[in-house]
Structures are given as structure tokens and as C-alpha cells.
Length: 205
Image (cartoon, rainbow, N blue to C red; front, top):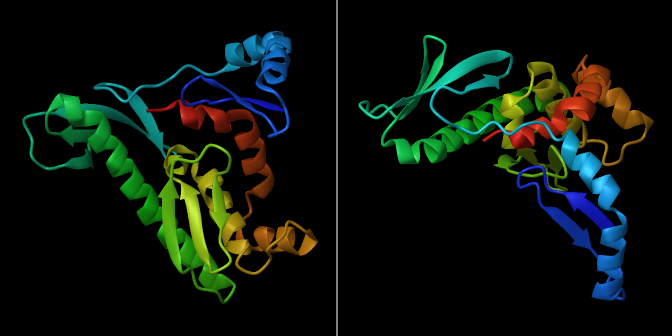
């Protein structure tokens, strides 16, 4: 039986094996009340995408500006992310733009690091995952969380190195870690950052 907190919704998810009765599961959930309250109390505040809010993109801080008078889509200028169109569509437009930027930058860095080890990336996909920051399929496709675009650049670099290393090493053994260290200098620092701050990326937007 597993109890998880969804950082995007603050909801509590209870997972039960098929052979465990619902009543037993609910009893287990009730026994975790103290732990749940403590964990919920430690969640970082949400940062909603709204006019005037500040968000970080790979070490740079930008203020979101709604531009209902403009017809340029979404663009960066003078330290701000300008989002054109009607205000009620701003969140979707900004999110779509961030996903596109994430895919573009993740694809470029993945190809660069793959070339260093004589490999090619079949394709790059971005998703809104909560259980992992990236994954590598057996056919050489890489999947990433689009929210990495809002992480520090050294974390961004490490996750790409981690997934590209899986193009050769499918496990997490010593050879895998040696390969990651060959592809990035930031493994230890990035893992420490994600351990402390990773959950806050799911609280943005």
C-alpha cells in the first residue's frame, strides 16, 4: 500500500494491491494522517502563471506580462515574457510556449551530448511527468519533463547527461555513472538541488 501526495494538485493518492480490501486501505490511509499533514505543510507555495508573476528560465528571471493589444504570440524582451492575446488564454499560451522552448533546448543539448559518445537520439518528447525528470526508451527516444526549463542550467545539463548516458548504459551501475560524469560536471550538485528543490517545479503554473 502506497500513499503519495500529488504536488500539482495537493491531492492524496492511495494505491492498493488488487488483493487488499478498500476498507483496509482506508484504515491504512487514516493511520498516515500525521505524516500527511506534515508533508502537506512542507509544500512550497504555488506560483500561478499570471500577469506580473516572475518565473526563472535557466538561470534568468523574467516577469510575465499580458499583452492583449499585441499579436506576436509569446516573446522575450527587456527582461519580460510577453504573452499576447486575450487574458483568459494567457496561461495556456505561456505553458505551450514554455513546453516548446523546453523541447527545443532539450533536443539541442541531447543531440550535442549524444554526439560526444557516438550515439544519435531518435526523438525527444516533453511531458508533464511527476515521478521522473526524464527517461530513455530502448529504441533511443528520450522523454523529459518540460518543467526542466524552469530549473537551473546545471540541473538541466545533468538530466540530459543522465538520459543520454542511457543510450549506452541501460542500468545505473558504475559504468553508467562514469559516463554521466563524462557528459557533465554537475551530477552531484544537481542531484542535491533536485532533492531539496525539485518538488517546487511542480508547483509552478
